[in-house]
Picture 1: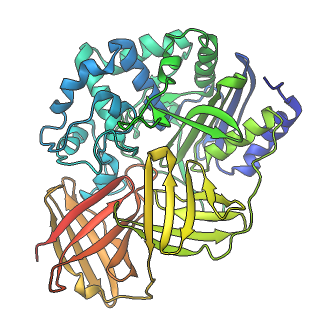
Picture 2: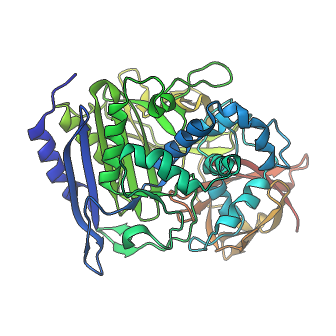
Length: 520
């Protein structure tokens, strides 16, 4: 194991407020089972001058998922014992149902229910109550891939899991978390805090940046087992110390969470039980991030070095980048080397199988990929392959080959010829999705196109709509109930034998392949 570089770590901690600018944050490091660094800076509420401290409880957001899975294993042992209960949450599902393990591993194929709130007309500031979630999840009729085939992030998986735990035990989910996980780990102040309108310790999350300023985020989401826990830095460091203390026990919950998992075809999975398994700078780690509008967090556990790092912000700056900076400093590592400068990597492509647009853009450090909810970065190697975290890109004569190893997915995308403008009047009208039982209305106004979704939560805000190529459009969705927002919705025009527009296929990475037919 590598010795701790205390000088470099102290220097990196000092750089956090300047390098990751925002109202406030906390960061801590555990090495060999001991807290070796903890830092808090800035303010939990800038208007009331409420300081950020190591005891301030912040939403850990999707880091909650590993605790949900740990509680599932603690209470039921083998997840398969609950498989026959999944139908209770998906009564109209026509595809083969996912197993409980596939829910835990994000292999269910279920479209993300937070992304679907956009298509059902929810405003970003809508109050989303606990009772609003299950009817939306229950409305699913198909998935966007067969269960077990691929990875796709879906918060609904963990919403179902937490409801299964509560129903199966007959006990309150929050009480079980406190008794079975928080208390044994020494997480003295961690709680289930699902209502984002009433944050623990009155902490405020902020949207914006130094260019436009920071404003308090308006969150109305009711989380549960998908992202509902609030914890302080001291709580999270206690969790990391508990992981280290139980590292030699094969039956410890974290070792069970970290056990190998596989796809249905036998390929090893890089995500399971609410944990991502990955490699950074040659280090194998387990970890997870979390985000709510105005908050960002990441925790990384490098078992081979007995090292854990936790970073949490009350603003949207990349906690992952801050975490890896501290990992590099703690172990005296050089940052990952930059690749070659890319040339001719600006491109627009179509992944027809998933129904999604792929955009690539070269910058001074590599290739930026736009495909999921947020952009991803890749560096170019000598073989002409651009490699990023969990994916690679290679240009071919007739298109783009994208290997998404972390999803067990190979994408062959054809190049599109961009258009400067397309007449939106051909799209104008009202559309109906039988899958969602929801409407989409497109309006053309003096050469511009706008879309509005209508469903379970009423009629939503007007969204901007732009033509990218012939019969390929995008609807932007930069703000939504959840963070990160779905991003761009790809809209593919479908035509009949005579060339007449008959419908649309709409999707984003979180929710793909949704068909709409023209209603008027």
